[in-house]
Amino acid sequence: MVWNPLRLLKTLIHFDVAGPLSQGIRVLSGIAYPGTSMLETLDPASWVPTLPRPGVRLVNGAVNFLEPLTATLDSLGYRIEVEPPASAPKEWMNTALVVWPAASPGESLAPLLERWEQRTPYQEATLVDFRQPDPAIAALWGSLDDGVMGGVSTSQVQWHQGLRFAGQVSTANSGGFASIRTRNLEPPLNLGQWQGTVLYTQGDGQRYKWILRDNPGWDSLAYCRSFDTQRDQPSTVRTPFLTMVPTRRARTVPEASPLNPAQLYSMQLMLSKFEYNGELNPTFQPGAFGLTVQSLGLYRQGPKPVVVLPGGSAAWGPPLAVAGFTGVISQGQGFEVIGASKNLPPEVTPAVVEQIFKVFNSAN
Image 1 (spheres, rainbow, N blue to C red):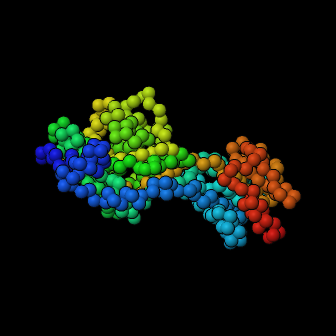
Image 2: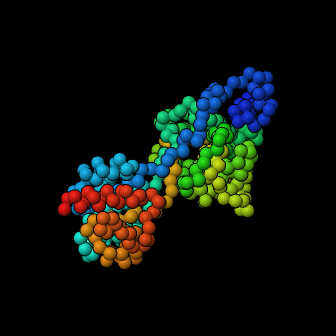
């Protein structure tokens, strides 16, 4: 394999690295990058999902009220779910309230509180589903390999059951990396309400890098997360924004500020023989490689769900507070907030609590 100057020209054209000269290079070289015109229709701001519909989880006897609660709460923007078995994954997926019809304080609630306390409040939504590629999104991505420094590695952006990053990586000519990167997003993505990204992937057993940039500069700081894959096995890669490592050309920059998720300009996937600061990638293998990303999601840690206690009393306040939960009990024509807080969190509206009690009161 020999260095291919034509690939370098294609890289310069796709990413507009040469600035005003890019158009001239495109004309003189006769290279037209497919899909460029589609970028005019792209609106990255439209990708950003609203926060997921909050869930209302029914526990024990509350399941008997599934039908009337579903009919009542759906119009308020809440979805209904039934408490899964104890063996289910220990995460609260977008759950804002738990309904437990307690008649009086007793030991029956204690095991539930203990189990709930161990769960991580979690909210997730899809940013881009690569299994259904938009032509404009596809036109964003291009190869950026070690050919920019004389290497001979090659990669391609493919679309097969997702975004497929594949090619041949070589250490010849002092090279050793291949990557695909988006052109700069205009306007940049504002993911300030979220705490990190979620990649749903299937790889080949090698360690890859997920890279984000919060500056439009071509050689601006790259915020990295290395992640391992298992050959032909699906994996979920959760990356908190605050833990991404600021680097410049694979050298860490400890004094740099954390990534700013409120202005993300570009995304990149990379396979490199290097980790950081000259350390080698322990799973790197020259030759053919392939990584498929089915979707890119966002997540954030949410607050613990509010426990709604039809038939409960203020005596439930202390055990709820010890477990760090806020509860709600019926009080006259309204309700009272007890436990860890005296106020409802922003994602739980008074209207949804009132409707839950109304359904239970109408059955008595």
